[in-house]
Image (cartoon, rainbow, N blue to C red):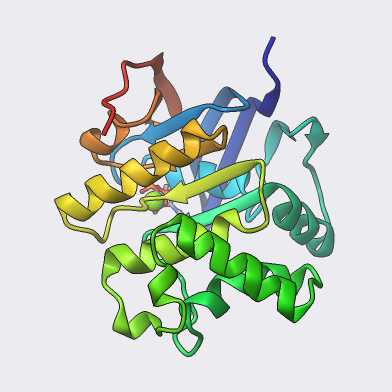
Length: 233
Ligand code: ADP
Ligand code: MG
């Protein structure tokens, strides 16, 4: 039996909208093992980001079980949630979420600053991770000087630098053209092949086809969950 990184049972989540409730996740069951590369698909508004935000401890479900690497995640204080995010998780977003006045290497080093790692070790490691994503030469450039694909590589390096167990990516290629999407998915495939567990939310079937398992959300439920023949880039 491979190691379960993520265990979700009968998860429910509603939002209050005025006096009514919008039931977004209706009894989600999902187990993910170490080393998997999973896509979560579904049309806009199907609850993909809601589910990913719960997995990322950025939001909390109303009911159900969620365990991350064997740790039950429930009613955490904000500081405990931040500790678990920092320890277990790396995030990649559609809009990159880089800090505009910091250079590439400073952006990548930031999670280590929050972990209390010293300046020299931080920048050394950040440079290593920038090299890993093919941007060693761009260390001292600002995000405004980089293309979308390069910015997403910086964000990927930043997500990896703390060596998280699980990488969560919400529409990581949503702002990129098709060639750059291809390049970023190839990079994620390489990172997965090195053993990293990745969950990607996407509404693009082409992107989902480049992962190893496709979970489809519809009307708040998992409509299908299949291991697929990955298109290797
Ligand atoms: P997706 O990422 O699949 O597009 P979301 O998880 O963002 O879907 O949203 C699912 C549904 O929940 C949508 O109808 C959205 O409008 C609603 N929703 C998302 N976040 C909130 C919120 N904070 N408050 C109220 N409704 C929300
Ligand atoms: Mg979304």
